[in-house]
Image 1: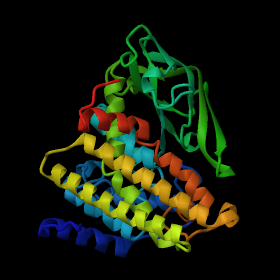
Image 2 (image 1 turned 135 degrees about the vertical axis):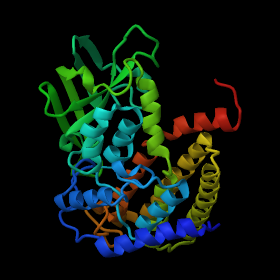
Image 3 (image 1 turned 180 degrees about the horizontal axis):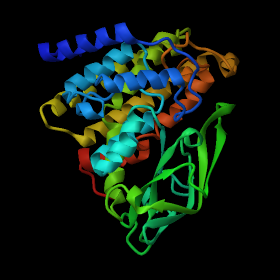
Length: 388
């Protein structure tokens, strides 16, 4: 299925394509984590913001041009064609700044959201905790009000890029007596605040793959002015934050599937069957995604349909990459290695060895809501099944 667009959308696409052709920078140093934005990429992100091309759906003062959902789609499509990574601080731009624009005060938008969007600072998301990875309602990090500040104590884990971030959007419990889904608040905590300790640890990919962090808060004093949204209203902010992350998320899975089909050469009969399955998965993903996009363009958003796209896309990438790894036998375990020519304007692990590419697919089935959570949403909201 191929979407067709009217002249207004195609004119928007042509304008952005011309901008990219004229201004795409020479790349420099690679990014070291999801909150490390090299100097060349900071300049590029700032130019995108100032030109209204960073997040086109935003108003001009926040790096956009009030674009429609179809215009947002072709914007991402043009970036994908050129293998341009949207931002080297994806959570900061796609989740944290977006959440501040939705729930923050005018001062917070000016003091935090705009600098994050212009790459003057970077941000990480402090949600997961030991024993409460995907269960935000189970968080135990405490924030006790003391006059004009909160005193924060607790621990976060899997905090991507925290050691390179300037600020953490942190979910804390402000009312321990309230039901689990209530009593949660959200604080902006600068990482240089006394009592904040960040400990990066390597992933399964390599000892020097440092993105995940443990973050400890010991008597950290945070101004009440840094609270995003009302006290004990963090559950609403959380749902909005993840909603920002899920919007058009299926396009990134379609990109990874397209990369896989380009980079993997099937050899055996089983390889060819698996390759054909990945081709069909990509067509199915584009078909369902295009239908969801059309509904959104008509003002008929279907949140549950996004869960179908999330599960299909992330698990199709994982299954196809596993087959590519298996087909290489022992050679697929070589590390470091390349499975494709690296793209100069994107992150290196998209072209890394098959073992690394496979292990990273597990993040795709977790980020934006785990497959298990998505299946529960599908069961209840799509299939109408009762809660267990």
